[in-house]
Length: 147
Image (cartoon, rainbow, N blue to C red; front, side, top):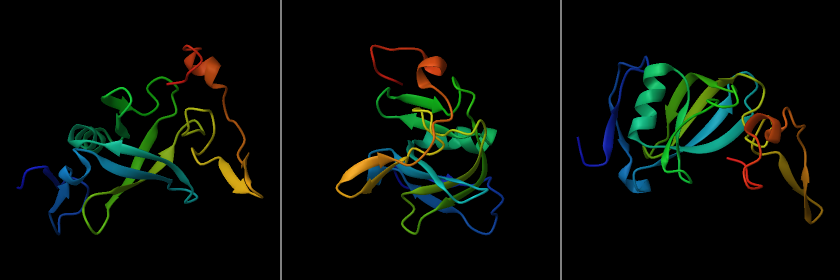
């Protein structure tokens, strides 16, 4: 096993072993998160080796927070957890796709189903999603910033 790589095992795929290239992204992999029920892209996050190992072990999405520099267990505060149904790796072994069951209806910390709730149209950005929860109620005010 090369430096920066982690074997991908324990996902119900016993035909092959894949070496994941964490080194290419400075120890982090980008992770596209998709709703398994409707195919909507919910968010983009990052995982380090520990986050991936915890996700595999628990079946719940765990990411690495670049702003807080620590593991981020999705839904730990809001209750909007992601039950992982499928994990896929791209052809270069340096990005993941998680297909999840989104519990609670919102993946976004701003209270929307998807983090991609803004759409470019006619030279401006508009909101295309509906807010599922009020972040100030769920997370509380934090110097005007949300987690």
